[in-house]
Image (cartoon, rainbow over all chains, first blue to last red; front, side, top):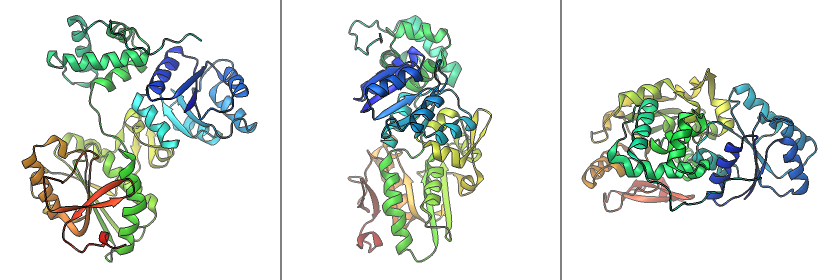
Length: 119
Length: 290
C-alpha cells in the first residue's frame, strides 16, 4: 500500500516509516497538515494516511475536516496516530471522518493490526 | 526530507555487560520481570530490532535514548522484551468464523435456547469479553440465556479480568476504536469495560489438567494458544477433559498452530471460513448437515 505519514516529530515519522516498510508498504512523509494537503494535491492515490493531531501550521483535525469537506482523496483511509487519548478527542476525530484511531505510545504490532483491520 | 533509512548493519556492536545490566534494570523497574545473562541473546536481538525501527544506530543509542526518558521508545523496548500475547479478537480468522458461520448455525440448529461457552486459560479476560462482544453484536441471541465461563490458573490475572480494567496499551491491542468507544468507559488513564459486557462473563480458577465437568457442558470451548505450552501427554489429558465438557454438538477452537492430530482421536475437524474448529468424532452433530 502507499501510505502518507503526517507528523511533526521526525522520530515518530521514522518509526512509522520503518514499521510500514518492514511490512512491505511504500511510505511518504509530511510534517504538518499544510504539507500533507500539498502532497494530496500532487498525488491522490494514497491508500492510507496516518495522521498526528497536534502539529504546527495545520493540525490533524483541521486537515481531516478539510479533506472531507473538499472531498479530496475520498478513497483514502485516515488513521489518527496521536497522543490525544481522551474519549472526547476520539469522538471528535471519528465524527470528522477518521477510520481508526491509534493512541501514542504505540507498538509495531498495533500499527500493523489496525491498518490490516480496515484495509 | 532526510530520513535515517532502515538498514541491517552487520557491524552493530554486541550487547555489552554494562548495557545488559542497564536494560535488565530498566525492564525490572517497569514490569517486575527479571531478565539476566541467560536472556542475553534474546535481549540483544530484540534491541537491535528496536534500534532499526526507531532509526537509532544500535543498542548503545537505544540505552542512551531510554536514559533521556522518551515514552515512545520505552513502549517499544518494553513491548519487545516482555512477552504479552494477550489481545482482543486475537487472530482475525476464528473471530470472523465465529460471527459468520458458527453462531448463526448454533442459532439455527440448537433447540434449547441456552448458549454456553468456556474460555479456557482466559488470562486477563480479553478472550471471554471478545466472545461476549461478538455474541452481542450478532444480535442472534437476545432471547437466549448466555453463559460464558472463563477460567485461568492464576488468581492474579483473574482479579484483573473480573475488574475489566485495562491500560491504554492493553485496549489498543486488537480492539477496534469504535468498539472501544461503545463498550468501554475511560477512567483517568485506564479503560473499564462496561457492565453490559462484564456481567456476561463468570470467572473461575481452574487447572486445565483437572476434570472440568463441574463447570458445566459447553457449546463452544475456546482453548487457544494454550496447548503449545504442554507436553504431548498433558495435551492429551487436556483434550480428553475438553471432550468431556463439550455437548454432542459442541465445538472446540484451538490456536492457529495447534491441532488435535496425533494427540487425540476423539475429534474431527469442522471447516469454517478461513479456519477450522473441532467437533466430537463419530457423532451425528449438526455441523455435518448442510
